[in-house]
Image (cartoon, rainbow, N blue to C red):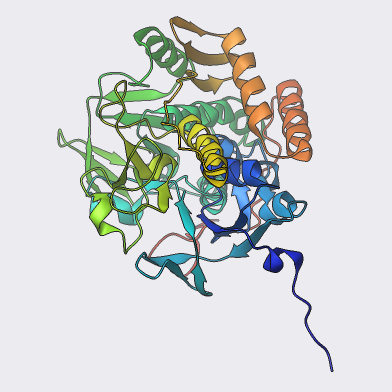
Length: 441
């Protein structure tokens, strides 16, 4: 009769740390707890880490999905005290020190929540139904399929109004994601559409970037914001600033001034909000959609539950309204919490967290980027090269770094976005099949 021998992980006598979410914060935490006196369990509904800053390049056919994804098991495999379970957390039961998931319950001694953020539609339910999002690899692949399908469909359309609607691409939100996505689509118009869809005038493709602020990249310096706006205009992107989308359907959107834009494709990049989990309502700031935490990232009212990154609302003197919801905050908080947990194992008091702002950067196109580092604000080729260096260095895994560098090099030399396969046609919400082509012979 067969008997199942317990794995070495199951035999560890250490306190159990359950980490929910394998984004920047969660991954940083488990890497620094590897080999430490804790039994760590990582839970995530995906089986891979996603490098979100390069999602827009997957969406615009510059990179493959596997270039920015890294399997969790490849990361935790060499770590004897770390295990992974593919599970979606449904609820936290703090009184029982247990989390409910779709694959069963898991007990914990210390719980760390690092689920990141989700798209914020600011109460606009219509746009939540029809707009595309860019928060995951699957959503990036949807966007890729959508614009490629629209290109193919445009070639067989006969009615001018329908053709224009097919080639009007609207991006809502002029933060880094919106700006980078708009710039990438503009370069596709200048290269791929012009050279490979010769039966169609590339000028018919329209890229509109909408934002309620008076300038793009509102959180950057005025110099960088101005440079980014200039680069976008040079690429032919239409900027509609001080405008807000109030409603829309699958064929058009309406702005707050009453104007209407006909479009089949709306990509929402206007903001994010922290993911919340039932069971911890006492520590939730509902208005901010983030959990209130102290300077050690412990959630208010729950001693052994910590929240990291976009989910956490921590007040410190330099950031009285909380930290920005960016990757650098998540990484630093994950690393700091690991240090404090190690101190806890050694019987030492935890140290307060202080965020160190390492700057902001965004790329708009070929040799066009902006960088803010302290008092330094610059753009152009140097900023573009620095942007590439930083992002390659932050990727998980040598293979991903090598593949991304190769793809970027090939794209720079060939002027082409090479990964343009429609392997999974995008099906719009409310329909059973992809939008059909209507050809007239």
